[in-house]
Length: 338
Ligand code: PEP
Ligand code: MN
Image 1 (cartoon, rainbow, N blue to C red):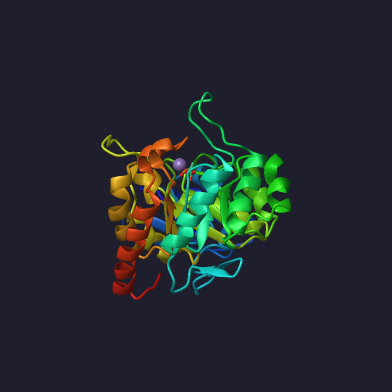
Image 2: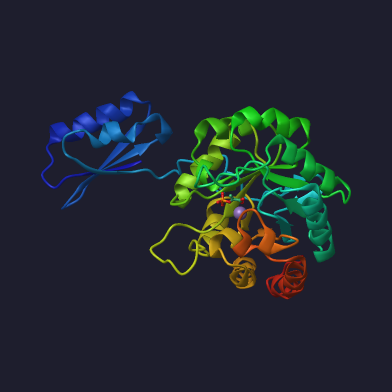
């Protein structure tokens, strides 16, 4: 930790800072420059409350040198994490495309969607049984019945399933049905009690980025899950809130290389909720893979115009298949395969 003192600091103020730091078990090193005095706090800086130092007279700024997250940080774990999803690796050389509808509607719809997922060459399937809708009057998802419908459709093709958990009270239903990946949605990225609970299980988790979350806040949320013992975490960039109205959310492509530098966790991209329009999905998908994403979460519906949720952004099965072919070339260009 580096403590920068104000321009007219007194010796007593410097001594008070040194005392406070040393009380927390750290040592200090005072550097008296011509303009400023800088105090270095040496030792485990997590033992020192930044705010308590900032509040001392004469202190201008306090800078932490160690990241506030640890388990998920690249500086503590250099090698890329590869999450094993029922035998399918996510985070290695192969880019994984997770396809499927926004929400589970009927058995027929999910059976057709599963066929489309397999025909396109995807190895994992998505579908929401519990839906976080902006309006309470919109379709809220089929709930536990939806999990059964989804599992039934996916099992026929041995497809691992990815589905959103909104409430900790549904966690047992997820575990009993063998959900392969628990999705924590954008709106719950900072639902810390939910994060703690999924941290206690060992099921892989896709943690979506909050609507306006910074990368640091997002990684702190991942740290909540990791701190409980569950290190099978996949980060999903799905676009952030911006001033622009021409598309649903602004895909933060820059976040991909930044995350790759900051964390060893796999990073995937959801081009569907970013663009909000089916025609944008191929371009955003290619950009994501070119920028180093380890996978994509893509909405595909057997009949997009009949979808109960997010109809405008769903690809149809043929479009997903065409996209998979195009993505192969992009993946190859960056030393990956699909
Ligand atoms: C979803 O993937 O179905 C979803 C609701 O996404 P998000 O949480 O990113 O809005
Ligand atoms: Mn959706």
